[in-house]
Image (cartoon, rainbow over all chains, first blue to last red; front, side, top):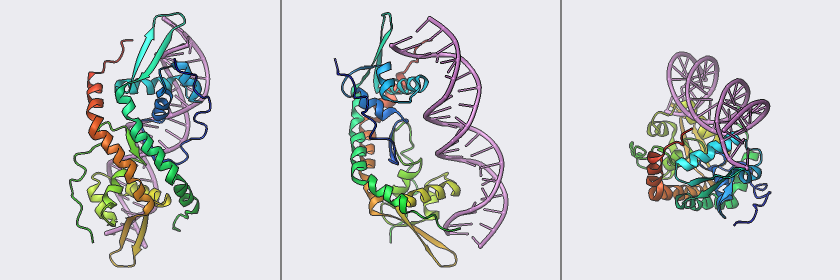
Length: 122
Length: 122
DNA sequence: CAGTATCCGCTTTGATACTG
DNA sequence: CAGTATCAAAGCGGATACTG
């Protein structure tokens, strides 16, 4: 069993201007949530603040379709469903980490460039 | 001076299903075009098949604003404008290469998973 | 708890035509 | 040559409400 996810695990990393994206808007964060073990729908929803159930379902289905995670429902009342990374899903951690590294090293430069930017006078 | 770009340099890599994206739809390809030296607007447009001048301009402006490339117009007739990667722009090659590596190693698995996919019966 | 069902708006991308 | 101007379409992501 994995410990509860840190409720603030993403507060530091909104997509300020990061030019690197994995999958759709939520894919990378979902992968981070599943990195330490399987999670249930509601666990994900509470950490991914603001995501609606519709969008979370869509993201999870797309990732399942692409072979990045598995969905296993348990026949209990109340229902329980667990999402777990596959080996293929785990391979995405490598390019994700490359993207994070880039941000750590260079995102400040991008922000600075954007601040200093003056659109060319028409 | 750089040699002409291979007109087919991107024919092998449409975004089949690659889950890794740098910037907007064209950013990564523009960076590849500029990797070997500065290029003019028309050179880019001819290699990025199907891109309209409006969209190419938008992408280039966004990249200039973010400090990824420089735009230098020459006061000639006919006009000439050259786009060149900055050092910051070049740093994106690292995560880009990580993404390409991922595709080489794992994209086939994704495609296969997608082929085998059966949406759960409602 | 783990979703569906509708409806909606913004952003992204493109088609087409025109210009300094 | 290197763009700009307009218009239109598509794609995502979201709000809200309801259900097995």
